[in-house]
Length: 480
Image (cartoon, one colour):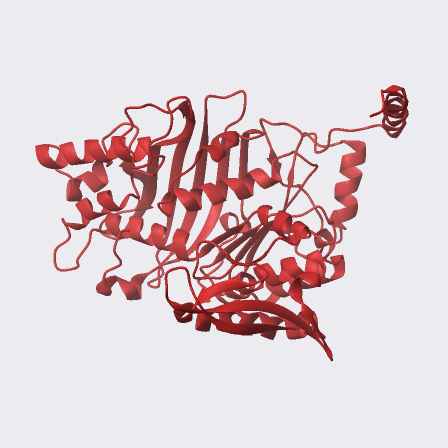
């Protein structure tokens, strides 16, 4: 990782996502989503920023969440396995994700940092230099053309956007970073970077955020003093790995199957998965207990008659360390029973509650939740969003099918998908302060008066006819 030096700690910025642009990513041929903080400046650590995304099934809502999940994995240094191949649109050879961030520094400086990455699916080569070799006919997702741009200069001035990292047109750096960190005449560094570039790409890792590359650049820092451009890379990596939390629909599957209880926590990249009896090491048990204390504090007002209890039994982990069997129980008055007996909605709320609390209190935190409304009572959903809008400090990005939030949070926080794959995301214009956004949205869906199609219309009589025809085909089919 890029190092945060001691002299840098008191200058770390407040970070938020401003804009996401997708090209050929799943069902999105092209789409641009601007958060409210890109349109309305919010001073450091004072107000929350929310984006609720609505639209019909298959119109690009989950694509936004999955794109941010990929960016988190790429910058976080994770390998992208073959399962991510499906993220590239079936009609395209590659996909591009671009995310723009706002960096607010404690001295009042406000800068923009943009990260762009291209993804391509290819058959794996036997010549791979990656650590994990696959069979030749297996496809892999390749990460290439990473570009980082900013309007912040080395001397602290804010000016025009310029490139500091460019793996598309250069070995690594743009002119700005190259001036400080990379001598193109240095044959040894050039050979090492060339090797690392091929190795990381073949292994489905980010080249820019590989440990080996950050080590090469950090050798140029003297006495803990780093170039401003190096610091930007460190700040972006710190935000992505420690302050961006992305919760996709996989949690819903685990909950529905009652297979496990995933508990998302602010200091872990992956959730703690609690099965019927999960073994947790002794050194981690205090952290798990602290997390459940946070969850219980929030639950006391959200679901007043519910508290959680951790039952622990001493055991030994697979690594031979002291540990505990952990079982999660629901306590409702005099009744105590296994937590997985609770409804799907309650299990999901508990799963994300620690991250929700963190984003509520931490201005530089961003929580992204797909299908935030799944299994959640709509009135409670509205209350949680209103509380986050009114008193929260962080950033919340969510998708939903339930239209209740359209009535309870500010209209500036709502965006919609369209049925046009080349223009997937849309912001309703000329919405008056007295307009009910829910009614306005449903009216536009029905009448289609906008310059974009927000819903591919269906006709009830055609659906009814198709259902009857399907029934006849079912009756006429051979039984087993």
